[in-house]
Image (cartoon, rainbow, N blue to C red):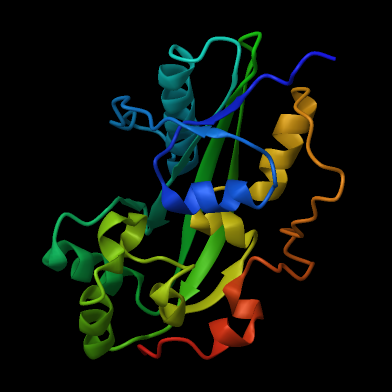
Length: 223
């Protein structure tokens, strides 16, 4: 039997790497160095789909015959796209924009199969934030966690204390919608262990969501 072509994650994100580890499959990590300038005059969802493909294509050139998985996540509120904060003031600005409101978090995922076939999709979740205080903003920024996160917060980290609710797939907000990734890989002929159960469906209990654990419910208090 021929060995399965390797899977390459075209991202240096530790969050995406940790999520993909949950599937129990071997993979390589090769972060993309592609230009991530978003196309003009398009939707945030289209931007994430485009950038996921751009990242995957750049890495595919270095790994012929492999499965290449690219992803991109944005935070968008009131028509604004929030990237990663450049400094403390920028992080505080973003957290004030999000405070007390719901915002969308689209994650684009692209898969390039060994034969060059490209498939891309976008999964979007809605996150509602608590009406947290200025003190909470300062306390969270002092942790250092927000500075490599779109929207200046991490739902899977201390920033979880700022989040009131997540509507949709929790892993989408983290940066890689696992149920959709599983389907993409299987449709492209990549073998996934039959005992993999993620439960990202919003109508199901998700074991990956720290808000469903006692630790997640009693973690760092910021608000």
